[in-house]
Length: 610
Image (cartoon, rainbow, N blue to C red):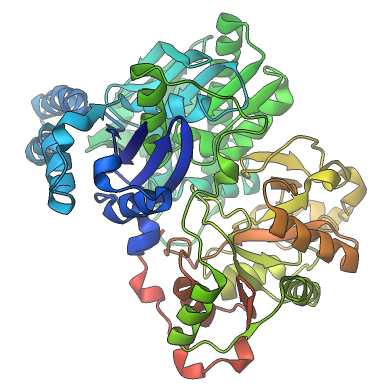
C-alpha cells in the first residue's frame, strides 16, 4: 500500500511516501522553491516522492493529511471569539480569514491535488490525521523500539499541545493531553520573539544564546507566567500574553517581569537577552523533565520516543538522557512540522489499515537520507551549465583531496548522495571545517554563513571515537543530543578568562576542538558510522589519519535566511556567494580561485531574515 503524507499551511510544508510501512521518500518544499520555511502546498516535494518510488499519481492508495482542519477551526473560533469579547478588536479582525482558511482547508487540499493530477479521485483517498497523533506516529513508528512511552511537546495544532502515550507494535495510544493555549512551544516562541528573534525559526538561536546568560528570570517565569504541576502539566497565565493568530505575544505586564520591552530584531544583544534565554531554557528543561518523569511512572517502560517541535531542543534531550529517567530515548530527525507528513502516513498505514510494522535495529528513518540524489554524469552536466570549473576525480582521490583541504584550514561545501530530511545537515548537504582551529567559528559565522557570531557549530565524530572526545557513548546520528567535551580534551582557563561574562567569553579556546565547543563546554553531537554514512565516515576517518582528530565541524550548506541546498546548482551558487574555499559535489572538486569571478553574486538580499 502506498500512502502519501502531506503537511502544509503553517510552516515547513513537506511530503512523504510510505510504501507497505517503509519510508521511501520525504522532502520539505522549501528545498525546491528556495523559500525558507515555505508553508505552501508541497507540489514539488510530492512530485519528487512519487518519482523516487517510480509511482504515478494513480498508484497512490491513500493521502494522509497531518491535521483535522475542522478541529483547528473549532479551537480558533472559541479562542478568537473569547479574545474579541474581551475587547481585542484586532482579534476580531484577524478571526474571519483564519477561520475561513481552516474551514476550507480540506476543500483547498483536494483542489490543489486535482489541479496538478486531475485524473485521480483524491476525495476517495483522503484521510485526516490529528496533529498530535501525526507527531506521535513520526516519533514512535520509525523508532528502534517495539514498545515505548511517547511524549509529544508542540506549539499549536488543533486543540492539544502536549500528549503522553504508549506505543506497542503497530498500536499507538495517546492518553494524557494538554490543551491550547497552554503550550510550551507557544511559550518558547513568544519569548523567542521577545528576545528579538523570529518565532518558528529562531528558537534554536535562543537555545544557543542561553549558556551566555544566567537564569535570573526563571523564578519570575514560574511564579507569574507558568504554573507547573508535579506531573509536568502546566497552565500559562494568559494575563501576560496577547493571542495573535496561532502565536502568543508578550504584553506590557509581561515586559515588566523582564525589565523592559522586547529587543528589536537585529538590535544589539544585551545581558538581559542572554539571561532571558537562559531562564527560558531552564524552565523548559524543568517542565520536560517533569513530563518525562510522569510518562515513566505511568507506563513503566524504559524507552521514550520524543516528538513535536520542542523535541528539536537538543539541550533538553541531552539532559533527559543523562538523567536516567529513561534508559533509552529516540528523537526522529524531523520531530517538528515537516515530520508530521511522515507521521500522518505512518499513522494511517498502521492504525487505519493495520499494516504490519517491522522494527529496524537502528531505526526506520534510513539515516534521514530520504531526499533527491544526483548521478555523477548529471552532476557534471549541471555544473558545466552553471559555468563551474571542476575536476572529476576518482572517489579515493576526491576523499584525499577534501581531507587535506580540511586539514589545511579550508571551509568546504560538501554535497553527496540523497538530501537529508529535517532541519539538520548530516553529511550530505553540509559545510565542513577543521574543529581544531580557534578562528573557525568566527570565520564560518561571519564570512561563510553571514550570521550572528554567538551561534555554535556541531561536531561530526566517528562513532567508534565518540567516548574518547565527549562525555557520551550513545548513537546520535541526527544531531539531537548535547553532551560535554571530555575532560581530557578541555583546556583550563585563567582567572581573568573565568571572570569574563556574556559574549566576552565567545572566542575563548576551551578545548582541543574549540570550533565545536560551546561556551559551557557542550557540543551538539552527530555520531557517524559506516553503515549509515559510509562516504562521510570515510572522509572523517581520512581526516583523522592526517590530523589525529576524528571530528569535523558540520553545519548546514546554506547562508543565513536560505534553505539548505538541494541541487548541484544550488550548491555552486552558495559556494560562489559565500566565503567557502572548496566545493565538492559527487566526485567533482571546485576551487574558488579557479572560478569565473563574474559568477560571484551576492544573493543574500533575496533571503528573508531567519
